[in-house]
Length: 169
Image (cartoon, rainbow, N blue to C red; front, side, top):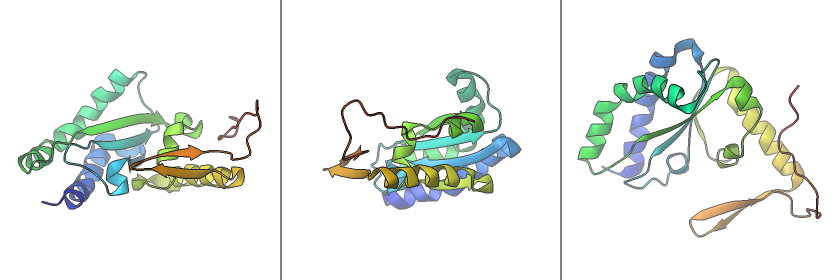
């Protein structure tokens, strides 16, 4: 089983499971990281961003709600394990308000994200706004081997502050 195809084959089931578990509460389900880049290894996790209308406070309580997705995919993950692919789901949870406030995590997604579900193109709009802001700053993504980093503003002056997200309204 080839890695890229194995991970890609799991994504439709992941979408189904998330929609079944979260229903109308789910606004966005995005995959990022090595799976989105198409460079997963046999031990890569599947980095996810779930944006919901409502979420409980705290990561532990948010993870408890995600157990439904993990249970729905248990057989799929076992099948991958049998093929030598030792993966797990690595979710990040945000409410709509938290997502709109921005996150440096989005820098990893602005060029390489797979939006499995995006109601009203909500997160696509967030990423497009960030991409426009990066272009206006003259930002560029610099690769060093298999890693990369951002030069957010090449002509940055000492003491200058870069604000990637507009202030909350």
